[in-house]
Image (tube, rainbow, N blue to C red; front, side, top):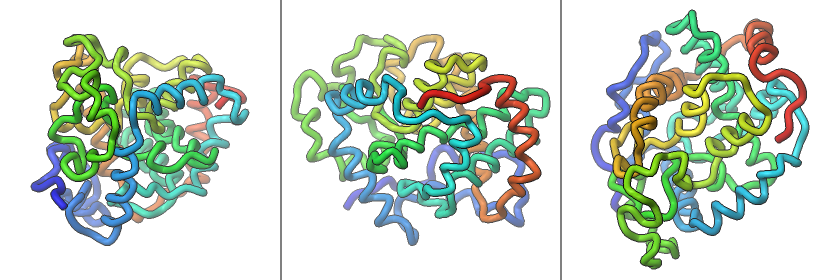
Length: 285
């Protein structure tokens, strides 16, 4: 089995974190060894087999009515206590803790940007899809454009796509596939998962966050773009202008993962205030 070799390029992005509780940076996003590797590889194999143009379009249709559940943001955060991400080689504790860890890391580094703190809390809430009955390969993990050939930095690219029917379709198997050069990521059909779903939830419920926040949510798992520098042929100038914001967010998404779990009860009032400011009330999911 050929897998990604060498250090992950996202390792150049690292915030100031306590070295006593942070793992050595070379140990994050390790897709070549470790106790969780078999689980991670299986998830990606299923994802890279079944994420096709037709599949993604069917999911947009299925979830585009936002009729699955009515709940507040904080209720969605609490739901993540029932989820452990099967694609993540770094942690096996519930996602709600990771949401607060990420938010607090951003808050410490960017005290003047309260909307950015909230993005840390929101970014993985789309994983509630797994609690709606969706398989994890259609919810978690790195994202990639469907409708064109996977590029070099896609995780496990050389060992997991052989059964994907789109790669046998001449419409979808070239570097550009079904897209025009530099069409912009807003016109690209991304693999279906929690990024795209949460972005659509935010749009539908009219979150009053800046465009940078929507980009961070929609593309934070698009590692082949924001870390691997692939898919440049699809990017517009707007995408390139937003890329540094996605990369800045990624520092906190990745390197705040540690087993020292935050005191969530103490943090709730602050984040509830941000929810009330930017995305209040009962939302449609």
